[in-house]
Length: 375
Image 1 (tube, rainbow, N blue to C red):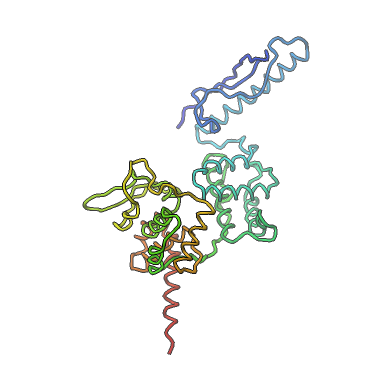
Image 2: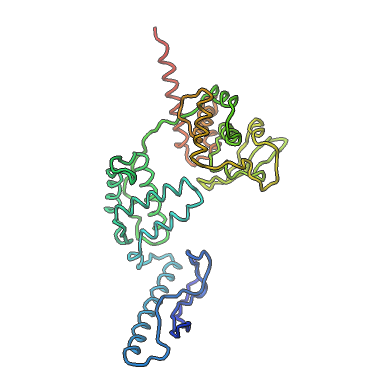
């Protein structure tokens, strides 16, 4: 249990000659905007230092009453938080502002940030830019779910949101509500009984071992991109994890061979991943610990164009993105007999059902193979 925080009203004379009122917290509280602890919060209420007439005296009287009201509300909010009680003032708070703060906190993870930002944009459109916590109940959640299922994309009024975009955005919305409930901003999670939007099964493109060998033997305009792509196919690492990989993450032992230790950008999970000697050779000559291994690799439309040309020059007619190399790793592991639980751990999946998508791909290939034999 946290120690209860005292909130006092203080005065400070400013340059204009007026008195500025502010709140004084003890012990200090964490300011999310400044990202540090503070004891002061100015409330934009001012007093006349020496009131000249009745109007100025009345102004000071009303201003002090308003300031005291703000002080007592702050103290009650902090008291409720200290003792795990729901904040009864939260209903009047701006839910859109709260959601946008959740978006900002995911800025370091590009794919995740983009999804959260898109969710915010659709939520803002759904609410016409105005939404308080007290507006968000079970019926609101159901209406937003139906909105996502029927609305068109922000980029084109003729194109409906894809099933997987609906699934992703509604999940982000529910995740924010869960966090708000855990922060005592809701008495009950309003989305607890609301069904999610099912995910559509999409085709996950991957390369065969022969196609990987063809890429290995084909020149790429961007040698670092080639090394990174093949490394992904041999390790299953995502683009975001490969981008930030440094020599400090690479280890070797006589017993275990080569392995890397890193924190997944997407899940923030700490991972230890064994890598083959062939994968290690793609890293090049060891550099100082802080050096990025794939220095010069960056995401851009031009990089995607180079990747597409490299794939085409290798004689491959599939639409391949960088993430397909991770799909390739998972599919080849399962094809070659690695059990699904081990593959799940190698990929850093939190849930086995995420890995099962690749198993379905293998099953489909088996069915296709069986159908080729006709009497």
